[in-house]
Amino acid sequence: MDIAVALIGLAGTLLAAGLGYWQWRRSARSAAPLTQDRGNAARELWERLQQAHLDLRAGKSGATRESLRELNQFLIAKTPYLDRDLSTAAGEYLTALITLNDLIAASEDEELQDRWEITSPDLATPNQIQEIMAASADCDAKRDLVVARVQAALA
Image 1 (cartoon, rainbow, N blue to C red):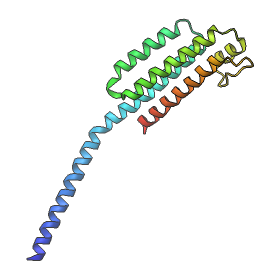
Image 2 (image 1 turned 45 degrees about the vertical axis):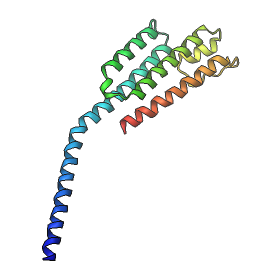
Image 3 (image 1 turned 135 degrees about the horizontal axis):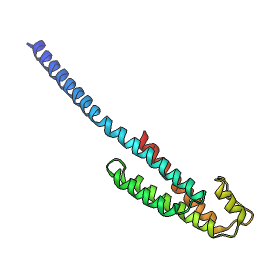
Image 4 (image 1 turned 180 degrees about the vertical axis):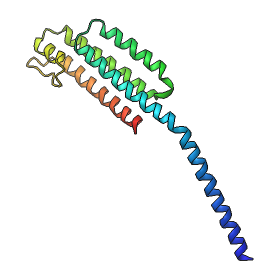
């Protein structure tokens, strides 16, 4: 009698474990496409931000307005796939890039303008315009935040 009770308990445990595994596999399969879509959206967002960055640095006419418009359209279209923190960070990063671009364009430091245009990672010049260096540091911090959020979305 004790063996029968133990076998019934074992069978119940195995059945519960089997059903739990089956349900987990089913939900994992259905979540896989959404996870892939989120990763693709994060990757595309990063590529768009970097292209906007390059366009600003190249001094393309109308790049600022066009970059903002395209980013906003992308964020609206991909809302279901991008978390709010990543979308917010992307907007803040692009705004910081535009601010930095405008400050550099308005400066009279030709060496700084040349470094910006050739996409040099080092913007330091002998003049060291504090406002521009602070904007550059802010832009770098916002970029790092976007990178971390994109990497998390791809993980």
